[in-house]
Image (cartoon, rainbow, N blue to C red; front, side, top):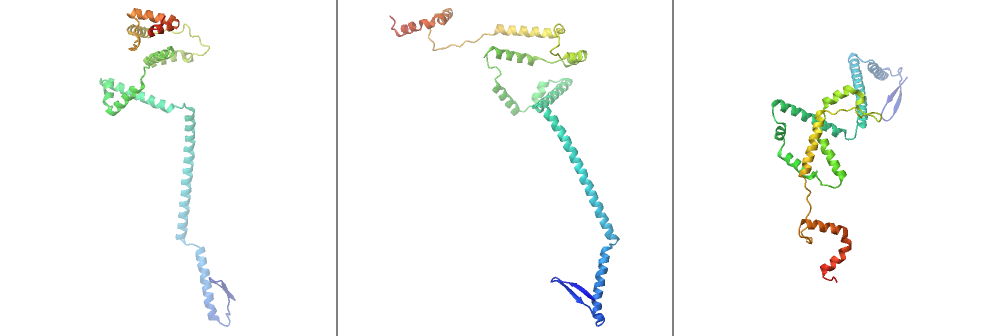
Length: 270
């Protein structure tokens, strides 16, 4: 009979002579039996070890379920973000600025209604909420803009007139909704639409355009173009009428009389 002894140097095979030395061999056999019992005990865990293993398994399953729920939530949020991004890409490039301006206009309208209900002046209430630094900054901005650049050409003058008239327009949303209900899709003209004779202007609209025309006529009467005066120019006239006559003469005959005029001024004329 032999036993195997495992060491750090190597394994040793020991032969046991149980008949010649039974007591000595019994020590080796007892150690082997004890090791076998320990291995059997480790292979068959007790109730405490089984409960601990079951608890670890439940904890692992719970963690796995939480991980799955987080994954599903991330997929859902990612899909929502993709849809929102597609919506944003379909919008105009300046949509955010337009949206902010529309929200600001709605807030201003609400404040105006609240001030009207309290019997207060909205402009006065608005100025009370503005700090001195903001007012000074806005004033500097206004001075930088210089909206009236003077007359450059008739196209620019026409554009300024058009912008002035459109700023004065105040759309009637209630009337717009009524017309939309009345005409439906026919309210928006197409290349095949016939508009002549279908629109009857309201009395308020006619009065408004008449008042605007009268205002333009009054302004035109008071308008006087400022003509530049050059102090260094040669005075060759005796009054304003003679100055106009001389300007006309120079316009038509100046190129023929320029040499004679220079000779007279130099005193070399024959």
